[in-house]
Length: 132
Image 1 (cartoon, rainbow, N blue to C red):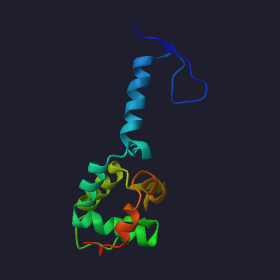
Image 2: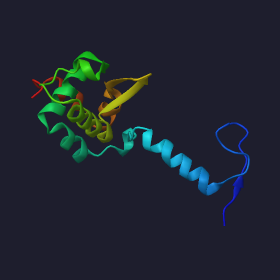
Image 3: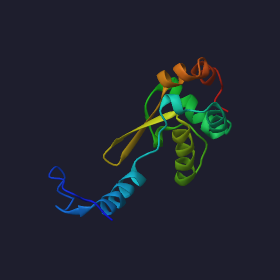
């Protein structure tokens, strides 16, 4: 049995849309929403695994030392856009970086405050590396 809902606040929902249809629509939206764990959900092994790759460590070092950057501004070796996107996804899902989307541009910053509260000393460790 499906429940009908009425949502006058969102014109994309029909007046008597079923709960199942609403859930399917929400699932599509969630697929486009970047996955970022809260600080309390970050796991040390996941963070270490993300930083274990030299390219990802360079990205983290770059963000730790200079703040927010666009993908094209990362100081990494010559890698394809798809490979860079994969590395960014790993860092984001580990909770290391935070995206800010402005139109078609994606800007990333290191979550310094969250990392310092969850894993004290980690940001300093990243800053003290040579970036790979």
